Length: 163
Image 1 (cartoon, rainbow, N blue to C red):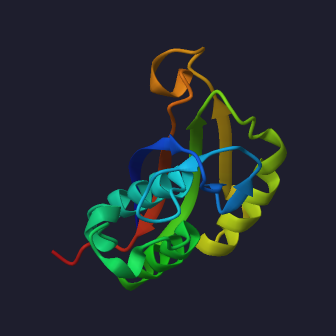
Image 2: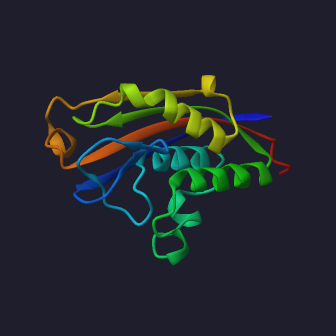
């Protein structure tokens, strides 16, 4: 087997009149995130990290925003599909570590539920998922509450290539 690391990032603009979904959990907020899917930047960062670790490309390759079948889709469903893709390529997700960057809302109360949702979608134990919230001390677009960003790292164990 071969251990591989991938990194993923995502950011979306804040919009009124939409639910805020992070880590598959609806967060109490007076805004949501603009996106073709549900706008879950946390899941999107994980998608790119795990697909990148397996050298399979990125979320846009598998789930293009131009495809109507992905309009408003829950990002946890995309994680399920990406996990199945990894398995088809003889890879297994070992763990993920995610940082969400926003001034508000505070995420700490939601993290246990996020870990439950992600563990179910990814097919790994909650103990293999780390989620942290951080701010930029009011600097940049996240500091001005214009949007939310996330960064993720994934460790994947893949069968050795035949070549």
